[in-house]
Amino acid sequence: MTDTMKREIEAQGVLLAQIQQDLARSADAVDPAKGRVFVGGCGDSAYAPRALSGVFEALGLSFAARSSMELAAFTTFRPDDTVILSSISGGTKRTVEAAETVRRAGGRVIAVTCNADSALAEVANQTIPLPYRPISRKTPHTLDYSVTLLALVELARSFAGQAQEATRPLIARLPELITATREAACPVVQGYDPDGKIFILGVGPDLGTAEYGAAKFQEAGGLLAIAAETENFVHGANFMLEAGDTVIALGGSAAGHRRAQQVVEALGYVEINRHLFPEDPGTAGDWLTAFRTVFEQTFVLQHACLGVSTRLSLRLEEPRAGRHGGLVHQSMQQRMMAG
Image 1: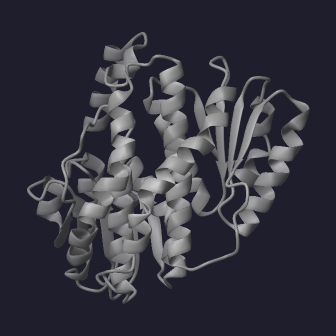
Image 2: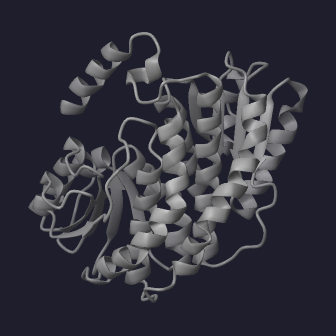
C-alpha cells in the first residue's frame, strides 16, 4: 500500500547521481540571464524555489520565487526578465498561462519538464528536459521533487559560473543521507497520534520545505497538516494546538534554528509530539552546505510521511488514499485544475 512511495524515496539516491551530468550540461546550454530572474510553478514546483532561496543567495543570485498564479496574474514583467517554470508534465494550466504572460511581455521563459513536447515547452524559449520517467504520479511526490531541486540548482550553478562537477560530491552522498534521515524521522512517526494535527514550521528557505512537507501529508489521504512561518505561528495559530498534535520545527539556519528551538521548548507544557530538525544546524557554510540542508529536511519529511502512511495502512495510489469520498475529491480536483 505504501511500497511505491518507499521505492521512490530510495530511488532518489541512485537516480540523481545518474542524471546529474545530463542536467548540468543542459543547464550550461541555457543563455545567461540579463535582468531579473523569477522561479516558480504550482504545488511542489512552487515550494522548490522557495526552499532553495538560501542556495540561490549563497551563489550570489537574486532569484525571486513565485507561484504560477502570482506570475500569471500579479507580476509586471520587463523585456529583459527571465522566468524559470517547472512542471513535471509540462501541462499544468496555470504554469502555461504564466509562460504565455511572460512571452507577451517580451520576457524569456525557461521550462523545466519531463515532456519536451508539452504545452509549457512549446511556449518556452529554452527547455531543460528532466532525463527520467516518473515512477508514479499518484503517491505523495518525492522523486519528482528532488529531481526538480537538482535541476534548479544546476541552472543556478551555471548562472553563477560554477563548474559542472560542483554538485557531484553531494549527490554521491545522497544514499547515506537518505538512510540517516530515515532514522531521524522515526521519533516523529512513533509519537504521531492519528487523532491529532500536524504542524510543520519554518522560516526563510525552511518555510518552502515546510510547505512541501505539509503537502505530502495532505496528499496522503488528506491528513490534517499545516505549514506555518515559525514566528507567525506564535501569533495566533498556536491556539489551535491540542494534546496529541505533532509539531515539526525546521531550523536550517542559525536564526531559524534559534527561534525553532525556543518554540519547541515552550510547547513542553502540553502533551505534544514535538521535534526540531536538525538538532544542530552547524556553522554557516557555502551554497553546497545550504543545498545539503534542503535535502536533509526534505528526506526527513518524506520518511515521516511514509512512516505515518504505513502506520495508518493508507492505500496511497488510490484517490484520497482509499479513504471515504476519494473519487468525489478526485473529480473536484480535476475540475478545479482545469479552470
